[in-house]
Length: 185
Image (cartoon, rainbow, N blue to C red; front, side, top):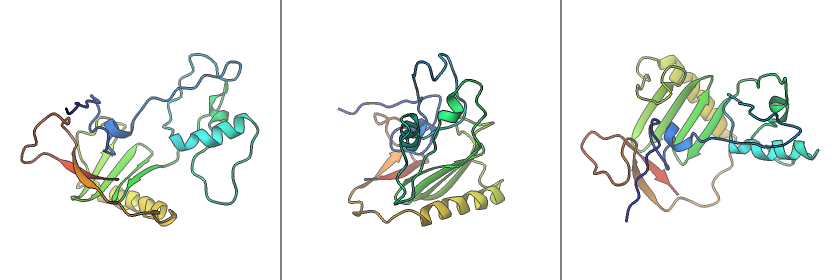
């Protein structure tokens, strides 16, 4: 049995780097520290959990290796200032994405494809503007390359790769012209 997956109105689902595959709600509850009903509008990452939890208990971040993520506590307190913009990165083998200042670039090695979206005007990623914005593609590719250059090599190679449809659920039949990318274990 194949279960359908629909993350509408966002495009994509599990196994994709489109908003339907990586945009999820984050919740935090800490009486006396986070005011009930607080809404935080900046994107965050699961990588932020460790630095935030360590800061909450006055712990120290490891210093023996580079660490991703930021401490969100200064931005969640009553009257806090907004977090400075920062890029967020995702990668799965040669399938990578970066979100920076509202622009999201997704690159796929298989198929060799580039998608660029202005999430401030197109949060559901319907219009790929890569061809119209070559300078933005170049800028974001440079961010991806710099981020990737600092990543350690995988401890083991991928042994499974399979196509994932971007705009269809698992129970829908593939048609010519459908967009897809590959998921790597």
